[in-house]
Image (tube, rainbow, N blue to C red; front, side, top):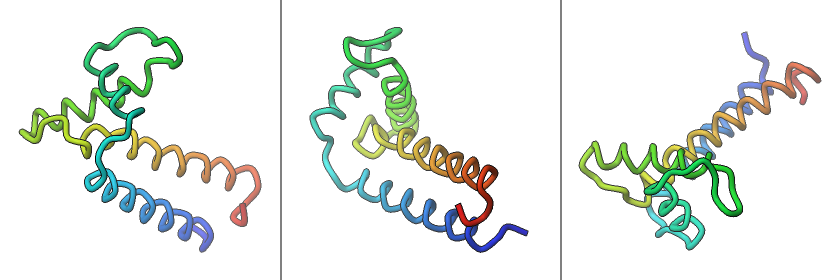
Length: 104
């Protein structure tokens, strides 16, 4: 059974991810996000100042929105990067827990 610290980390991460998804649906795209969205429409091996990962993640969300009939709305443009951020947070917490125990 997971210790209390790990359960707390899971809850905080889940709540933070849900809040980020709510904000993703509510807020308009910021200039950097529109830049990434433009990259996602023309995928390449890399861009002037970034590797291609963000463009690929945005493309996945935008295409999912299109498949579902919603189009590339701000929510879908942000969906995959937000979910990947939540998974990365859990992975970081898991590494800390493994290396330093439940209190980490």
